[in-house]
Length: 168
Image (cartoon, rainbow, N blue to C red):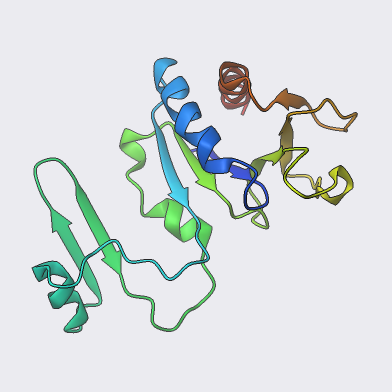
């Protein structure tokens, strides 16, 4: 099974900022990552007026838009069931990936690196260090029961992930 690693933190801590730097650092190490981003917002990657949008709104349960550069599959979920991370991971093409990174999903039972930023409005004792947390990336050096990574050292975090993958 492909390794899944969540990068989890409170909003405003810098998950996306870190991932935008971490993904290229992993690629430089020959690791091909996929990404699943959780959002609490009602999002739509399609645009009103476009044919694909109009056809989807006409009632298609799934709509795929494809070009020579990329394709996207949109699946309607009108019943608003809770997101199933394992199902979402299973939709990815594992033959082209070495790792699936997940932004968010902090309550899922997958390996995770928690982020902590001292000026993000939360206290260190609010971190939930369960059995799935493999490290905390922080801008301070707290004493914790898991490895503490420098939140601003992207290469160090990428090296930690590479070692974690090798030891699975």
